[in-house]
Image 1: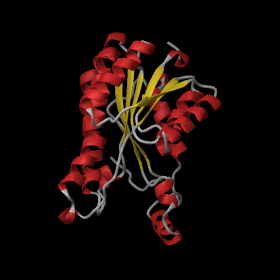
Image 2: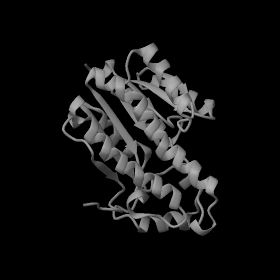
Image 3: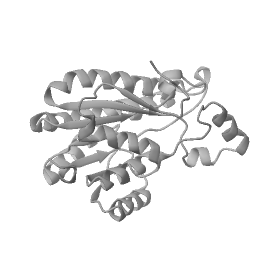
Image 4: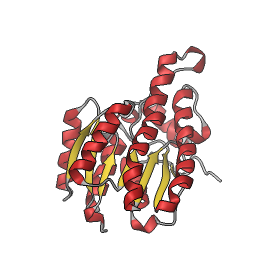
Length: 249
């Protein structure tokens, strides 16, 4: 099967890294499902960019933390398009705060979206991927899942859990020609980093050997490689996209 016949679902695809991944997959000829929860305007803008890139796409509104919604919407995509070949678990939220003061709701909401959501979506697509004996699952983790970060105990735990989930799924699904890998971004230029002061951005850059923040397109390039045929012999791995900020073993 060529890339042009493949169907992808990108969770949290309406903005930032998710949007860049949608566009990059569209450039490969993949039909892209753009998942979002609360910002249809941003999702429509991503769909337009997908179409401008010469690709096809569709909107897939659902909350990844809601197992019933995940099952219903993925069934709908399978009924309409016949298959899901590529799943990118990118949806994520933050509820930052020092652990001693962190509310239980802030812990639960981050784990539910960032980790349990990836589990729900992966579980929902694996049966069809196993039947077709081809699939790519790509989880978007974070450098803080490897090194931790003050004020982000919930986010770091969720992203570290995502790396562990990736390895276990990779072992379970390899015999069906389904690969499961992680991309772990470092500090990436997003709406959040744009809002930081110049002094804060400079301090961030000082932690990065390459001396610059990454772009969403840097992360999208890594995800696109793992989504394609050239990565067929790579599974259970974490690809760090962080300018050298963390150099894992």
